[in-house]
Amino acid sequence: MASLLIYHIAERERYYAARSDGSPYVPAGAEREGFVHCSRWSQLQRVARTFFADRSDLIVLEIDCGIVDADVRYERALDAPDDYPHVYGPIPGPAIVGRLGVAWPAPGIPRFDRFAAGADEPVAIEPAWSLSIRRAGPDDRLQIARMNHQLREDEGYPDDLSVAALEQRLADWIADGYDAWLYTATADQSGQTRATVGYALVDSGRSPFYIRQLFIVRGARRCGFGRRAVDLLMNHYGGGVFDVDALCINGAAIRFWHSLGFRDRVVSMRLDRADSTRSSATA
Image 1 (spheres, rainbow, N blue to C red):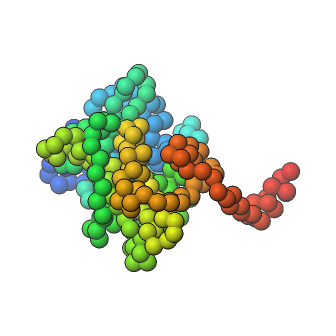
Image 2 (image 1 turned 135 degrees about the vertical axis):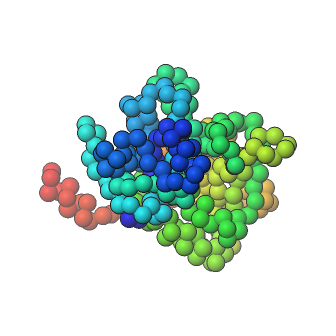
């Protein structure tokens, strides 16, 4: 199974019981059904609304399939519009690479809050938190690769690159001269409540500077961090001219970059003859 990120909504008490003694996590009912129900990120809100509405005893586990020994299959669930990932075995502790809390700001509307570093309870990241930037080192590359996987899913790329492959690609880009940056949000001056909220990848050897990737993590959006992240990046490079690309299907990204003053320069086009042939055959 490729090293992809999937999500499981767990009861906190059961998850922490397994965590306390180092046991793999197995939800109630998994022994009977033979697998652990999971979802892609795009499916998570529907699952929360349908099966866990307004419950306050939940936690979302972010799972790296590449660290799961059991078989992971994408299968159609009852009355579901698409396939859902099912893990046919327990979830080992190291495979749980992220955690989010589940809040209900309005009835039936879930919000997923990213955990702060070292915290056992979710902390909702607020716009008032300060944002800082630092250059990423070799030990940060796996974390960035996992965020890159989320970015690709948000942009609608197929799941054709594993986290391991994305980490190697990142290492190759850095070897070719790219700069990798991490963003940290901090609640107060003590620095004890903080969270990694995003990353950027910049080709600083190109003229103009090229922002290849900029990403704010799920659970830390709508806080103004994207705009502040770009400001920190530009301040580091002393201003100047910057280029960025956005997929035509990613309307949110296009609106974001336009709001910062970026303007369209070229239209890149692609013809997929296989798609054209299929369209002609069904017309």
